[in-house]
Structures are given as C-alpha cells and as structure tokens.
Length: 360
Image 1 (spheres, rainbow, N blue to C red):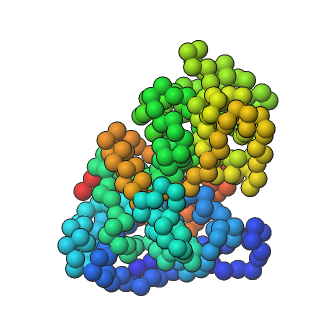
Image 2 (cartoon, rainbow, N blue to C red):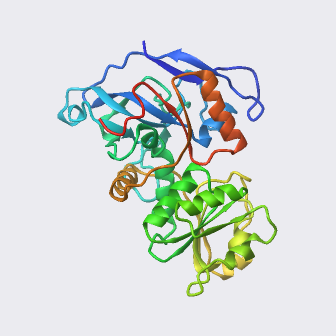
C-alpha cells in the first residue's frame, strides 16, 4: 500500500496545539475514465501547512496527506484518450479544484478546494502517489528539476494572480515593491517582474536576503525593521519615475500608511496575505490619492496554465531553499522548523522516489 504523511490528532485548542506528523497508508489508486495516477517525485511546503499543524486553517482534518505542491510522473491512467495521453509524462499539479477561468473567483458553489490536509480535498502531495483528474495536470517545463517543479505550483499561481491579474502594472519600466522577500510567493513575483522588465524593489528584515534578491534581478531593497525605510526606498527610485506603480504584499499591517506616499496617484496595493495581522488600516490619505487595495488569492486553472507557459518561455527557476529526501518525519519536521523561524530563502522541498532529474 502507498504511504503518506498526515497530521495526528492530539488534544489542544486552535493556535495552541501543534499537531505531530504521522505516517499513514492510503488506498491503492484506481483511476476512473478521466483520472490519472501520479507517482510523486517531489512535494513542497507552504505557510498554509504550518497553519494546518496549528489548527489555524479552515477545514483542518486528519488522515488526508499534507501539502498542495507536487511534481511527478503519470504511471497509470483511466481509459479516456484525454487521460491516456498523459501516461509516462512528467507533470506538475494544479494545487486546487473548483476554479476554471472566472477572473473574479472560483465558480464552484463550494469554493476553491486546495489539496493537502483539509476536508475540502482528499488529495495531498506528501505521498507516494496521488490520484487526480487529467484536467488538473500541466506538462513540466523541461528545464526544471523535480525540486524546482514541485516548488512552482502554489506560490507561482499566487504570485501570478497578485502580479499579472491584480496589480495592473505588470509592464516594462514600472516600479514594483515586493515585501517580505525570501518567501516563495515574493520570490516568484520578483522573478516574474524582472522577466517583464519591471524595476523591482524588495523589503526584508534581513540584509542577506536583500543581497540575494539583488542577485536575482531586484534593483534594491530596504530593511523594513528600520525606522523610515519608506524614505530610504524613495531615494532608490529612478529619477525619471520617482514613485511606485504597485506594491505586492503578503504581510498587511501598516503597508498602506508606509506606501501611500510612495505610490503614484491611482497606484495599486495587491495583497495576497496578512501575516502580521488579520486587520489593517485604510487611511484617508490613500482615498485622496485614489490608491486601491486589491485582495488576491491563488488562481484559476487558466491562470495556472498561463503561469506555467510563462515559466517555460522565460526559463524561470523557482528558488529552492532546502530539500530533504523521503517520507522521513524527522527530516520533514526540520523543514517546518525552517518555516517557523522564517530562515528560508525560497521553497522547502521533500524529494520522493526517483527525484532530482531535470527531465525524463
């Protein structure tokens, strides 16, 4: 029987409990007409997995494999031509279901069902195999290793929507601020922005992370812990365009008050997360400057396909911070500790089976 890693139920209240990991067996997959069986080669963590372990994520449950990011090889399919065409192909997995192509949000009445660790979706990628409909697969760009491919789906999709769909400024020459560089989404926005010819600036609490971002193409960065960082950033902006066009933010908190004087009239703050606080102020000064705050989540199946196509065309490589091999609870716990301490620069990955090869 195939194996997987899930969370084990122990007593505790949401936010106070930290569920331990356990190895479970999952049923041998038996694909129906349009389904495929993917033997996984790599899976990657996201912050939602840390929230799941603390019972701070909607629908947290037990007995469902963790993780939403995955890459592998299709080893069995259903009988339909649409499914059978995927046999033996290396693929990356759309991390959720229920959202086809609507720009506003998921079409399915139950909403968007992300893989990994919740009642909403029985699939997860921290496993030997996963069973998915053939429509949720994209062929893996051949230049990506298995680790890089697994690092792409959720953060790439979230970054794509926040930057391309929501910011309104994914254009050459635009000045974009990406906050909290080092996280997976922020790094993908940086890569997308540089590839689009934008001037990308970053914030971090760590100078080393800023320096690494500059090596990836950022024009500069500031330490957000320093008082008056927004004035320092203002001095870095090009003289011919001395303002920000958009901010891509995953922290919330005081981002409106800090960026309102930096943004152009009608500038956009595209927010995909609020790690500092679930609340934030919207100031009258932002109203007077016609600043817009736009919430952004993951994205549609169409956006996922567009994102993968862009990565393939531009030969972009997601940044992998660290990886471990196998369904080893001790090693995987170590990756969670990296995430808890915010020490990573890029994605945290678990390789599985025949992992690490760039192409078949």
